[in-house]
Length: 124
Image (cartoon, rainbow, N blue to C red; front, side, top):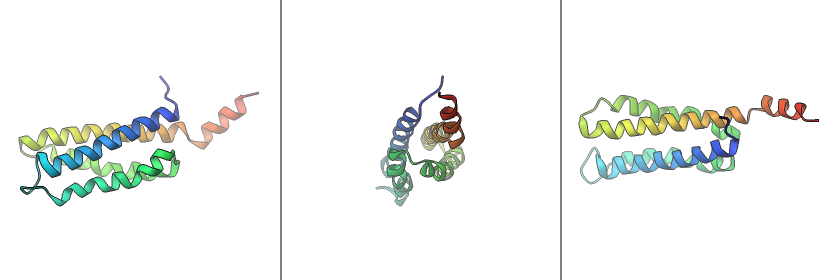
């Protein structure tokens, strides 16, 4: 099944918002490092900084965001080995971050210039 760039973009936006909300909930209320919340809730800001460019479908934003987003994959992979209440939260972050990474790559691949040139050349 082949997705259109619009579907990749929509999936990316939804997953980005879910990951940002998960980061804020995790570090703010569910399992903060300190009682009452933690400054680690700010780790959701880089995700939200990329949101306007991702929303507009700017290929360049998708390209640099794919590298930034790997930090969330790494954090989830490392923290999945923490004590039990954090393990589930880290697994959710890892799942969301991996799915987001795949959607970002899907959008970048479906909008690559070489593909557009091939599609234009094939039309009469």
